[in-house]
Length: 309
Image (tube, rainbow, N blue to C red; front, side, top):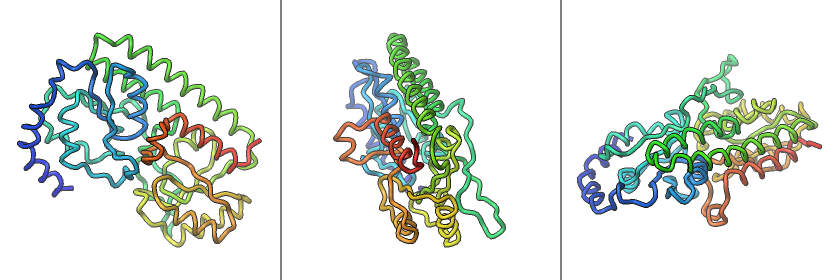
């Protein structure tokens, strides 16, 4: 990361010379928004409507936990009016990269503002049974917290374009109603299930969702999806499948589900996807997938995996 930031600082004069040729924010018809993750991108599109042009910083298919911005990304951020990110826990690179952005009019919008972050639970433990505590940044998977994120994005758009504040507020209320409706559907569908435990052969991403609906969530490991679970943890997950008589193991999007496949092969459990919505594939983007459609598919798969009525 240090080498990356040095490269960006050395390239800053070139980037700024390019920026001077970009249309002045004061003369734009729409607010230029850069969002780091797919949920923020989709939230901002729904709130901004036709008065905002929203760009997703992550390339489609990129794994967000290992993402490192390139000089071209710095140019995009420098040329924007509003930069929306999830918070330091999810994008630790943001603070450093913003130091190299020479745009005094750029409004920085932390979508996690005012949201209490939980600690990760249920991932790998050492031989003494102690967990390795880490802040869980996946707040968008709690649909109530997602509504607060929408409010934070509304605040950013209204602050940048106060003349259209009521327009943005109306869009935000309409979208929050859809999130609330989805939340109600989750509560209803997941209230009558054969089991309330699910095993995930990926990184710890669904803690907020599990707590929201009273589920027990067991994941293979903490941190980046590129991490490896300990042999002891794999044995523990396989034992959990047998103990709770579970017939499914969930895997995550955008990476080869190697760990989930090992668990499936050694237990006979079927594989089923649970999408963390951090980012989407190019195919999903081309199909026009939305955060709500991802959550709809997740609900359907949870109903199968938890054997709900």
